[in-house]
Length: 66
Image 1: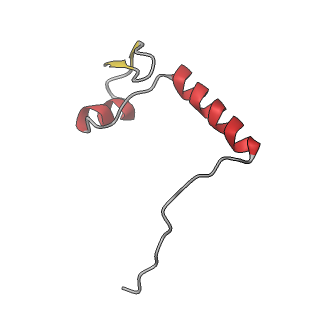
Image 2: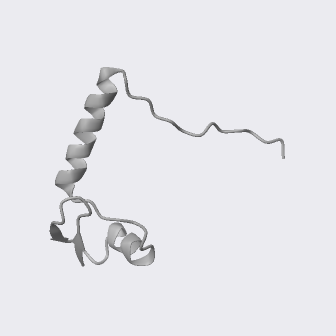
C-alpha cells in the first residue's frame, strides 16, 4: 500500500497486511506520518517537556456511581 505523509508529503510503501494499513483503509480520518517526521515531533516535544513550561491539558475523569 502506498501512503503519503501528512507533514512532508513523502510517499512510502507499507505492507498491505500491517495494522497501520488496515487502520488507514477502514477509518479514513486516520492519517499517516513518516518515521522521520514522527521522530522529529517526538524529539521536539520531549525538549519542551524538559523545559518545565509544557502543560498537557487532559480532561478530568469523573467517576460516576452507576
